Amino acid sequence: MAAFEKPHDLPAMSTIIHTPDAPAAIGPYSQGIAANGFLFCAGQTPIDPATMQVVTGDVPEQTERALANLHAVLRAAGLDWSDVVKTTVFLRDMADFQRMNEVYARVLGDARPARSTVAVLGLPRDVRVEIELVAALRTS
Figure (tube, rainbow, N blue to C red):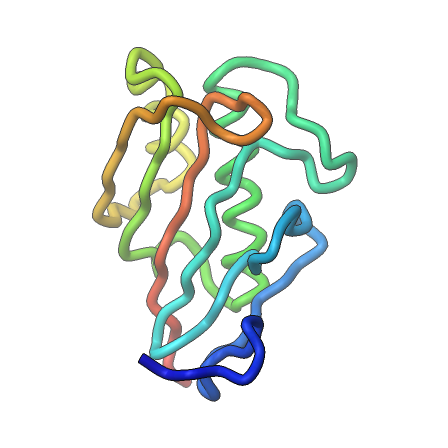
């Protein structure tokens, strides 16, 4: 394990990915980190980046916004859904799985990354869904 002089230092080959098209980090984390050939995206919730408020609606609308936020981070790194290799979906209630899955399938199109979906006791700002991903960086 590497030792860093400051807690926010990153390994030399890491790059912070940031876009105003996704919600600003509300804590000590980055929207995304490109490192070792991969992009690691922080979990995105259904927060509108323009207002920093949770979008109105239920699981389909919240899933749509969370995925739009992730897509913005992907675009900032020069990537798209076809580059995603793994997603993790956190649901407040597994009964929402089918409705989340319909939106997820439509938005991702032909992309079929590996995925885990887990039910959790709670999510920030009492949202119903949070999604994170890992994508492979393109080699020039």
